[in-house]
Length: 194
Image (cartoon, rainbow, N blue to C red; front, side, top):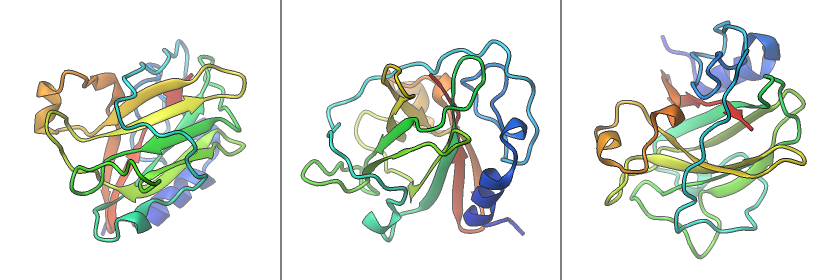
């Protein structure tokens, strides 16, 4: 029987940071949260990607978007914000926005939009939904990440195995999330290096 998203997130939040950090490449997500990973020597910064036309400043601080689309397919996104020396960045800003389950963005309000700050271990997480495909794009999330005193990284996160990945001119395989099935939805992991 598969664990729930809540139990996987709890394991991610409870485990010592050293056992969860990214692999040596930095941009590659790691397997399930309890898997030990290699040392973090030589991390490369997470590649930037276009902001796109639907960014809206002034998002609310929140972790859960799931109530915005009650019928959407649930997913929990989680990871670390690290510097190039593999040090977790506490208090880093992580902002997320994405399309709904019909491929639309809310440009009037803040549905499926928000931000948070990493915890003392550099961890971030959101409960949201899997976005729908829309014309010309593969399935993706938009993200801005900024460590304290650092530059803003604007990028996108992608799902592995999507047929449209190869046809999307913005797709970058270095931005693929590690996605696991759980008993009540998906759990995705990506560690940002800024």
